Image (cartoon, rainbow, N blue to C red; front, side, top):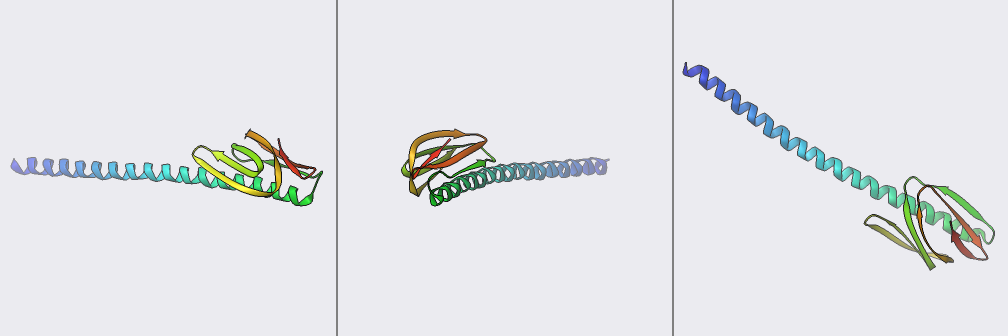
Length: 125
């Protein structure tokens, strides 16, 4: 009779141990997923800002009258003044200098941006 009770208690403890291990594993998995999503957002932000900055530099180098249209993967905020452009998204910010001056602007870009050079001044819309 004591043997049946002992086996039942052992199974109960083993089941409890398995549940604890699964709980810890699931918590770690959720944290890893959260960190991966955060990293993906940061990489997408950096890629988008770099693509826009490279387009600005290219239009600047090509001279007055040139333009480029970029389709973006994710929305981004842009503010430009004199020769500094700042890209923002959530808590991330990148500021860069350009060879050409900018028309002062603050934009929230969702899908695409047109970069054009008008008399040596870069304009975004």
